[in-house]
Amino acid sequence: QSALTQPASVSGSPGQSITISCTGTNNDVGAFNFVSWYQHLPGKAPRLVIYDVSERPSGVSDRFSGSKSGNTASLAVSRLQPEDEADYYCSSHASENSFLVFGGGTKLTVL
Amino acid sequence: QVQLQQWGPGLLKPSETLSLTCGVYGGSFRHFYWTWIRQTPGKGLEWIGKIHHSGSATSNPALRSRVTMSVDTSKNQFSLKLSSVTAADTALYYCGGVMYDTYYVDVWGKGTTVTVSS
Image (tube, rainbow over all chains, first blue to last red; front, side):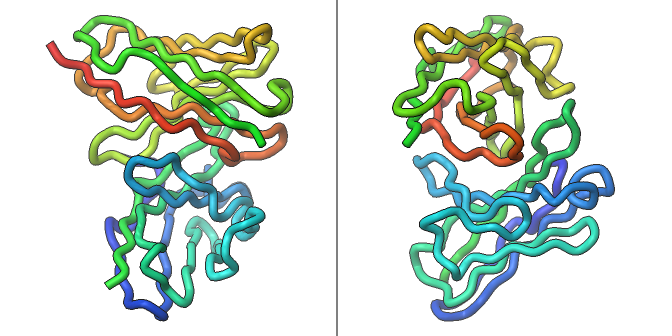
């Protein structure tokens, strides 16, 4: 059982928008603005796409955006493209003892 | 641009000790916390622990009794040992780097698949 709860799968057609939720608690997502999101393709290392809730690393498309409300963070992907199909994981800082906690991952399918 | 290269045995028997090493290339060894993360089948990602170049380390409370981490600053390498492995430790293990005062993994190794089987 992962510390953060994500839907197992989401899907959308090219050009559409989707949102992936990530629900934690008052001790992690709700306590810190340190939510990050990773894109994971099979056989490759995870790739950071959002950090500190809504910041985008250099080189990441502006089609990716992040937000947070209370204990739930969200990753939005607009103008879906086939290459967006991947697993997406959220993560949050929790404490120095549980430095990072992760979600179980969401499989994004571009139909 | 920091790059990580990791290595270690991919097949262990129950009760053995998992041992992985990660080499840091192309950047400052001292600007990051070095971390280990694993992906177990069907369970997502799990943070294992992090270590500072000074050797100061913190690990996941669920694994703490079995985890040992170390650094070799002369070689720009850091290592993970996980003792008394069971089938539940079968996973894809990643090394990674977290810059100071941040809470996200900025750089990742390519991963090592470790299977525990008798």
